[in-house]
Length: 229
Image (cartoon, rainbow, N blue to C red; front, top):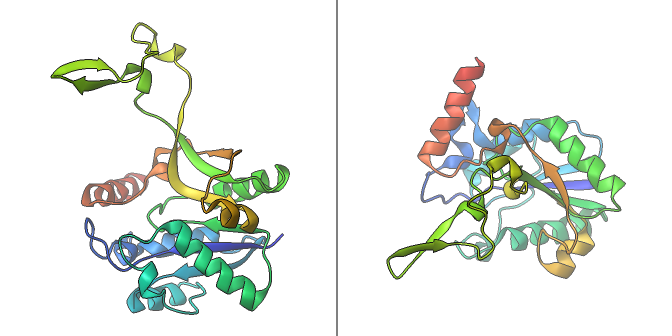
C-alpha cells in the first residue's frame, strides 16, 4: 500500500502568528508531526504544502518532501484544505505514480502518536479503503443545550433529554482535526475529506486531541510537556 501524507502549513496565521514553526519543547511545531509519521512503511512520502520559504526550509531539514511553494490562489484565507490536498495529490501522482491513500495531518496536532496513525492505516486497509476520520468524544452534550430566542432559553434540540443522567446519554463524537485518510477517488469525487460512510479513529487522550489555534492552546501544549517532564 502506498499512502501520501500531506502536511498543510500556510505561513499566515492571524490568531497565533508563525504557529507552524513556533518552538514547542525546543523544536518547531511542524516537526512534531513529521517525527510522528516518519518510518511508517505504508507512507511513500511526507509532502509539506506551504507558501512560506522559512517553513519550507525547516520542513526540509526535518525530513519532509517540499518540492515547491504553494500557488498564491491556494494561500489565502478562502483556500480550503481540500483544494490544497487535491493540488498536492494531483502533482504527486503525475510525478511519482498513483497512491492508494491520501493522509492529511495538520501540524497543529503535535501530540498525535505514531501508534494512532498506524491504527488509522489498519482501519483504512481493513474497511475497503473507506475514509478514516480522527474523532473524540464530545465534552458537552447537545441534548443538554439551549439556544436564545426572544430573550428566552429554549432547548437546542426538540428531542432534548434534560432529565436524563449523563451516563444515559448517547455517546457522540466530534472531528478533532488530527487525522484524515481516504482514497484519491473519494476526495476527487466528493471534494471532501468525508464520504457517505466513514470509519472513526477514536482518540481518547486529551493531549492527542489538542489542536493548536490560539495562544491559550499553545500554553496548554506547553503545560502537557511540563507535566510529562
